[in-house]
Length: 372
Image (cartoon, rainbow, N blue to C red):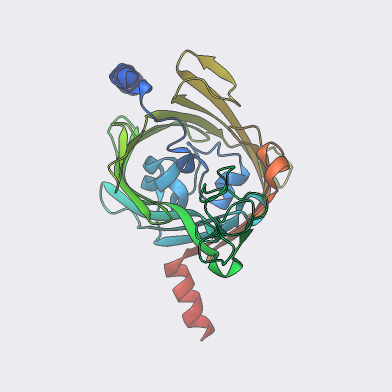
């Protein structure tokens, strides 16, 4: 017991030193255009995890752990996959997610994930304006005598007397994508560590950008029913490079969480409360629970109630103060999950419905063969 406590304290000091160095290293970067560059990476993945408000750094399912905490991959025993689709803010944003996790072999476990956040079919009116000025007469018209005196001709604005050529209205899209590769390993101190390499790709119309980032994480099962988790995201600072030479960066952030599982005697359900803190170093922001200089701290909380062995009910509050509810059905073949987001930003921009499917391929294959 003393050895485990000593090893835990060594790991704690290592992470504390890493956070301090990370903060000092990035202080000169705060003057750069970094705020909100990586916001798309904070929206979350997994219907179950999002229904719990994202308070899942210590309790995410293996198929979602490539995002929340790659160290959670180590407990996976099956070859599983997950797909998710959600139309955020009443369908304005489309969020799609796919992940695959492999059963642990030896000392290592691996997982892969991809997600896309996009807005499609945005009307493009840049070529639709008939910019002939407020008199409505332009070059080529028999009554055209020259540019308008008020300067409204060819000014790029829709002035009185001008109109749009609806046949020239096109469309474009905007998307933000991330590809994850994660690995987990257990240490002798009972602490499980994990790491993720993520490739980032963004597009806005004809513009493109690329970047690569790194996350490291740890999991400490202090007791069988009490687990602590920690994840350092974009630990080396993630740089994004646009085709026109513009550069952006995503500053490091820290997520911590705890999960507790207990089953009241005489009642046929299991309770899993969880809580978490997100810490970002991006200066003054709105919707933060605590601000200390450049450090912003936001809290998350969630509760999952399991009835029997298959029915799950969930509720949570995310880091921006929005509320989430959901449910799920677990079977040996996989699970189906539904989530609903409301309150906070969702009250203004529209609620979100989410649907996810997890498949355990080995069990699914055996069940299919029996059925056939």
